[in-house]
Length: 309
Image (tube, rainbow, N blue to C red; front, side, top):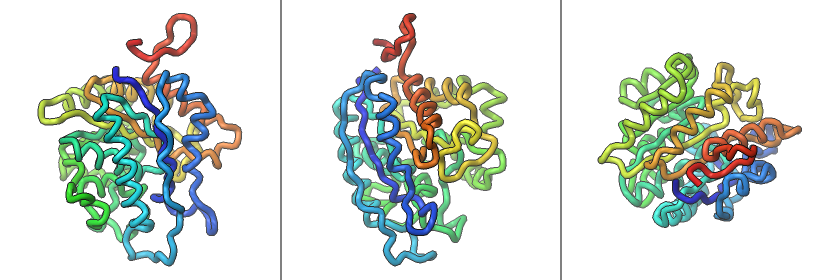
């Protein structure tokens, strides 16, 4: 396995305010996971922070397109610079968000290098775009659409490299059975496995089949996007849109482990967990354990060690 480097991307630019006059608290995700000693437990090196612009929607109104678009475009380029540097150096970035729009930084970075796939472990497809919705605005619910070229050019075609992902190179895991995007995704050939399908077939098997389909000569590798809302709200209530019917930790663990341990996996980002909604830190500790467990093995003495180390 490549050496791990932890990089903070504490951007909340892609989410709507949880209440008037407030900002989304997911920008505290990285700090909360660091309090759980994630860097040391992963045996990772320190990648520092990519500081986001101020959250300010200004005079944005419904119908104006994606809010914070200029700030998002600038931040995406800056984050892409850092991720690209680590990937080219043969390191494996573990990027701590932030909302789901940070995935644009990863996919832009990889598009600069070549053709890569995406394995998105997420409770929803984040595929809202003008072709299927009139509620465009929050990039955190639109990043898959944007990264596949659906949306405004100032976000979908940065550096003239859009789309950053091809539809056929995307694999989705963890959507709820009732997700309205499923029919459109099927028509486009975007592979997805719902919670029920993962449960029926087994998470490790589902992930193994996806990995085999991504470990092909046409792709230089793939990135993993992890949204905490893939977990059931009974164990992960600290997200902006908790939906019943999610995966449980013992189901997510083998799925995530199988994905990130592929030799063709080049990085992982973690998003959406909001410490403001987790006063006792229980959900943050669980999320940290799941990320650490994907990369580490128990050495027999109860101490976590980097896999293969």
